[in-house]
Image (cartoon, rainbow, N blue to C red; front, top):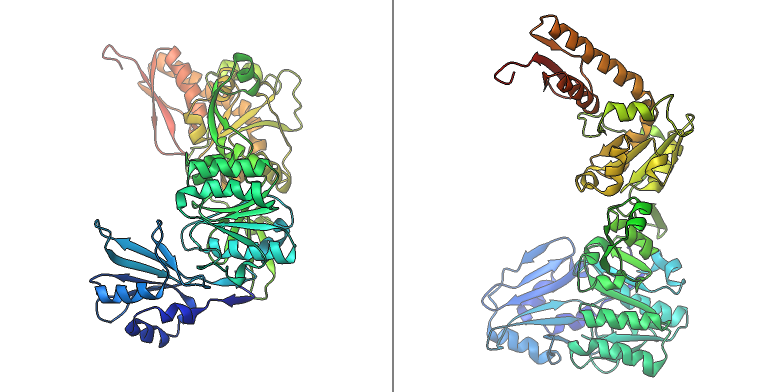
Length: 534
């Protein structure tokens, strides 16, 4: 996101570096995009910019270079971090086994105004917010700007728990980039959770801001704070919501995960297996922001519902936001549905991974007597999605003008649609569908393109009965030909489900049937069974 203004105190950063490095950087045309300088004993210095890394053509780093640097910055704490007073720059130490300093990572700290413009509406909602993203993507910079906006523009009482002095900078007086927010420093990193609780109990904040939550105690403290009605804004290392959910230490931030054993009646009601994975608690954070890069972020609102869907193997579809060159906020869903069909070309189906699966033609024929029994409406197709986004199916059905209705029970469904990964797990709803004779349509993945192909062809599935009858008549004719002396008979090409029914009919008549060819031209060849097995 393009900032409105940027304060980086770059001269303070350059002043503490060894002279040869400082002079080299001053001659660079990319100084404004400098992220960090790496000084390792016995190696040439390295610089990292937004778009590239470079090795300086200078003398290797010596102990004297490191000593000169440490004399100009603050004292390293227990977390091996230090800073320069009244600035946001961070210096992180690497030590040998005997604690000798052998390397320093020097990161430029910036206060960037305007980085929260894309999420102004979310900031005004008074909801707790968690920022995720890889290291160096700009989480702390956004956190710092949020502190300023909340304390100045919205006039809220904001407390920052600043464990490493990274949000408010080094020294006793915090950097002006945090606005009117108050800062509580932490003597040792392992005490961060205690200071979080102390902030609520002693200083009556409306908002608490925390950087780099990483322990189970901090996650529990965050839940305690949220339950007391205080708005919580924090960062955590993790690329996305799904990876955070799989992190046993931090998953509690978004509700946690537990395995539940359902009773027989409840499992039957849900149409699932008795053992299911569910969200344990309400999420501590109601909004999750995934900082994808310095330009874009993905936003998950209603985190509880999103987590529930993830546990059902439904891929989340966050809203992507960014600022254009004019500073206007642009928004779109990560997985777009087409505005017009020409903008969304779908690949032809090359393989029949999407198939009907069933157990026997007799069960299917009974269900499809004129088209379906139990008074099912023939004007639309009833579909039971399992592990598939229902909202996406509805939107695509509207787009393609398909007559269909989503149902919740296998007995009401003409078709069950699921993914390959779900089908392989053999959940109870799929097993019940197959035992009941309901066709199960399998998608390779839960993607818009796969669902679109299914929706576009869903009406044709209602005609499957006649095609199956013709295929079985073809198999019966082959039986007669073999009985009349033919050594082998080749049937017409069919899809995998229909071939399976043909195999069953042929096998019941003690004939050998083998499939040949590739989809969609795969066919069955029938042979007479001999004493050797053929």
